[in-house]
Image 1: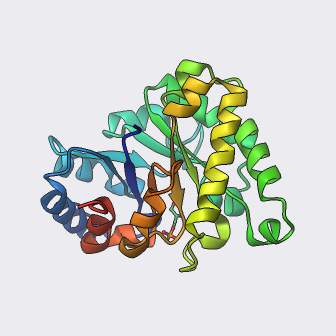
Image 2: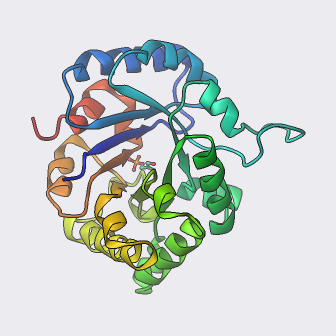
Image 3: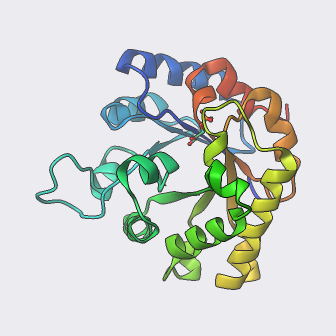
Amino acid sequence: MRRPILAGNWKMNTSLKEAVELVTGLKRELAGVTDADIVVCPPFTHLTTIRDVVAGSNIALGAQNMYIAEEGAFTGEISPKMLKDSGCTYVILGHSERRQYFNESDEFINTKAKKALEHGLTPIICVGETLDQREQGITGKIVTTQIKGCLAGLSESDMLKCVIAYEPVWAIGTGKTASNAQAQEVHALIRSLLTELFSETVAQKIRIQYGGSVKPDNIAGLMQEKDIDGALVGGASLKVSSFAGIVLFNK
Ligand code: 13P
């Protein structure tokens, strides 16, 4: 049985005050949760403040991105070492918005994953097809290429420390969730790729989150699918009631 993992990707949202209010409310509402991992991923500028609010709670801290070098002349970038220092234990890598607006390639995401692991951060590695690709019937091909590229050269023990997020681009922020069956089909494909690339043991242990318009009223159905182990939530993670409703899907 894989332990569910529910993560909130706040993207470029919240003032510092709003962020503190949000996480304070989540701490209160979710204090009793012991059977799932809960992660919040605020913007960089809020990380250390939020670290102090969640200290000692069951909420872990994640970042939304990271650069590959430890330090140096990379104006505007944030290193894995800095994320560790700011209290992060997770980092989202290769989100479709990073791929789309900042031209991140599978190869670059792969390097980021290796660097994150070197620094003891758990990468949440994102994959997913666009609407155009789904309509062309090449979802499987696209996700296979992304998985193979992003996970290239990882050892089994490294892989066991990763989380994968399947986020169909057409379902992100659109209110159009993939159906349970559509999501399950791709999750099953990813798990079979993990068997092929690593081992059956790895494939059975890795948690694969679904992301794309997850809400309190669709999470339970998604979580009933065999290969869906959690959610990476955007819009609905910005409100205490909706993110708490998602985390408490089985209560
Ligand atoms: P929405 O939940 O807003 O569709 O965003 C999903 C997402 O991109 C999470 O990383």
